[in-house]
Amino acid sequence: MLRLIARRLIFAVVTLWVVSMVVFSAIELLPGDACQAFLGQMAQGKRLENCRTEHNLNAPAYVRYADWALGLSAGDLGKSIKRSKPLEDIIGPRFRNTVILGMTAALVGIPLAILLGALAALYRDRRPDLWISFIAIFCMTVPEFITGTLLISFFSVWLGWLPGIVIMRADAPLLDVLSKIVLPVMTLTLVMVAHIMRMVRTSMIDVLASDFVMMSQLKGVSRLRQVLMHALPNALLPTINLIALNIAWLMGGVLVVEVVFNYPGIGRLSVNAISDRDFPLVQAIALLMASLYVGLNLIADLLALLLNPKLRSRGAG
Amino acid sequence: MSAMVDILKGVMATRSGKIGVVLVTFHLVLALVAPWLVPFDFDAQSAVIDHAGPSLAHWAGLDILGRDVLTRTMLGGREALLVTLFGTGLAVIWGSFFGVLAGYLGGRVDDLIMRSVDIFLAIPWMIFLLLVIASFGNAPMVMILTLGFFYGIGVVRMARAATLEVVVKDYVLAAKARGESTLSIMANEILPNVRDVLMVESAMRWSWMLLAFSALSFLGFGVTPPTPDWGLMIANSRIYLALAPWPVLMPMIALSSLIIGINLTADALAKSLGVDKTTRALV
Image (cartoon, rainbow over all chains, first blue to last red; front, side, top):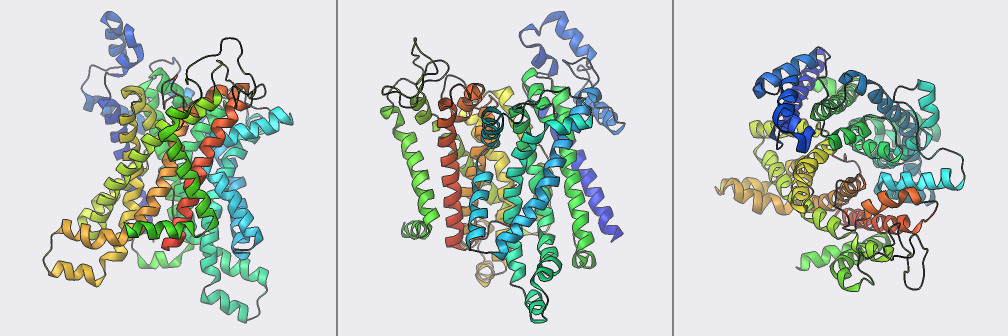
C-alpha cells in the first residue's frame, strides 16, 4: 500500500518535471524571444538589449531553464515582462479566485450530479430519466459562453436579480467573492453536472443489475437502504477517477467562463498574458494549471486506492 | 459502402438519431452552398440603420455595424466546420495509430506511449492553443494541426483500450503465426475490430473540437474579422443583448443546433453499434 502511494507520488513529480520542460521549450520554440514578443515593433537597439539583460535572456536556454526550475522549487515563479509586481502577487489572488470558483461549482455540482444520476438510473428509460438525460445532453453540448450569456440575459437583464458581470478587485475578501459568483458557478455547474451525472447513471445501472444487489433485494432489504448502502458506493468507485479527469478537462471551460463574467481568475489572466505576450507569466500559469491537474488526479488515485481494497491487494498500478 | 448504409440505418432507427442526422446534414449542406444563397454581402453595411430588428429585407435584423445577421449566420459555421472536420480526422488518425500500436505491442512501447499520454494530458491545452495561435496566427492550417494534436491524445487512450480487448483473440494469434508484419496485423486484424469504437470516438471528438474552436473564436483567437463566425458574432454582440437580441440569438441557435445534432448522432451511433461511451472521460 505504502509502496503504491510512493509510486504515484513519484510519478506525479516526474510528470510535473517533464511538463515544466515541455512548457519551457514550447515557449523557446516560438518565433522570437520573450522580449521581442513583448516589445513588438519597438524591439530593437538599446531597448531590446536592456530588456534582454534585465530578464537574463542572453544566457543559454539550459541555464535559464535551470534558473527557472530552481526558482520554482523555492516558490519563486519568475519575473513578469510587462507587469511590475512580482508574479506571486499577480497570480496568487487570481489563483485563489479560480480555486474558489471551481471548488464551489464542484461542491454544488458533484452531489447534485450523483443524486440526479442515481435517480435517472432508478427510473431508467422512464419519464424522469428521459427528462434528466435530455436536459443533460443540452447542458453538456452547448458551449459555456452560450449558457453563461443565456443565464445573464435571464437573471440580470430580464429579472434583474443578479449582476451580469463580476466587478471586484482580484484580492477581495472571501465573503465578497462568494456573494458575486452565483452566475459563473451556475454556468460551470450545469456543464459539470451533466457530464458526471451521465457517468453515475451508467455505472449505477450496471451495479443495480449485479448479483449482490439482487441478493440484498431477496433478503428483504428496503429499496432506500439497498440504493444508498449497496448500490451507490459501488457505482461511485469507478467514476472517481473519471470525475477527476473531467474536472481537470473542464478547467479549459473555466477560462471561458471567467472571460464571460469578467471574473478576476487565473483563466482570464492567462488570456490577458497571452494577448500582452508576457511569456514568463504564461509559463508560470501553464505550470500552475498542470500542477492543479496532477494534484487532482493524484487525490482521485489515492481515494480510489483507499476505497477499493481490490486495487490495494493486487498491487498493480 | 453497404456497411456505411447499415450504420446509417442503425443511427436513423431512433428518433433522436434521426434528428441528429438531419441537423448535421443541414449544417454541412448549408456550409457548402451558403455563399450562393445568402441575400447580402457578409460585410456590407447598411449606412442608415444598425441594430434594426427583423424586417422584410433583413429577416434576422442587423448587427451593431448594420450588417445582415442572417447572411452572417449562414456563413458563420464554414471555417469552424472546415477546421474541426480536418482536425478530427487528423486526431483520429494519429491517435488511433499510436493507440493500436501501444495496445498491440504492449511492454516497453506501451509504457512509453501511455506515460507520454499521461504527461501530455497534464498540459493545459487551452493555454497552449492560445499561445500557438498568438505566435503563428490563426490560419486554418495552424488550427487544424494544433487542435488535431491535442485532441488525438485522448484518442490514443481509447484506441489502446479497445485494442487490448481485440489483441487476445484467436484471429490475431493466427495472423501472428502466419508471420504477418506488425503493420499488416494492425491494419487488417485489429483496425476493423476497433472500428466501431473509433467511429463513436470521432463523432464525440468532433463535437468537443467544435466547442473548443467556438471558444477560441469567442475569445477572439479563432478567426480574423470581418470573417463571419458564430463564436465571434456572439462575443461582439453580447454586450448589446438587452438592446438587440437577434445578432446574439441567431449564431447561438446555429452553433447549438450543430453541436446538439452531432451529439445526438454520436449517441445513436454508440447505441446502434453497442459501444458504451458514457463511462469515458472527456480527455
